Amino acid sequence: QVQLVESGGGLVQAGGSLRLSCAASGRLSRVNLMSWFRQAAGKQREFVAEITRDGRIDYADSVKGRFTISRDNAKSTVYLQMNRLKPEDTAVYYCNAMYGSISYWGQGTQVTVSS
Image (cartoon, rainbow, N blue to C red; front, side, top):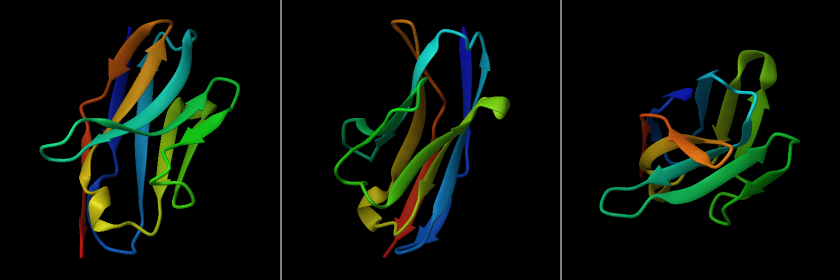
């Protein structure tokens, strides 16, 4: 099993920055993909960014050029640096880990961007 704990959310003004962290623990040897998703109130959960075990990265079009995903293998932590935040980025942000074909989720962290 894999446990994920997100942190770093909060309230920020439009144009500001936040860095989210996702600390992973458990059996990490088979985790081949780590991702961030977000879910705004009344909307479906959507993909934000992902990083594979071998370092391949992908982003949703809505965050390209503003968000950066990275990882620290020594700390088993994945980060999401969010710059030039917009009110439409307001959502609960979730970390996801793919352990083989099994998907694990964190509890989420709230990001609120005021205009």
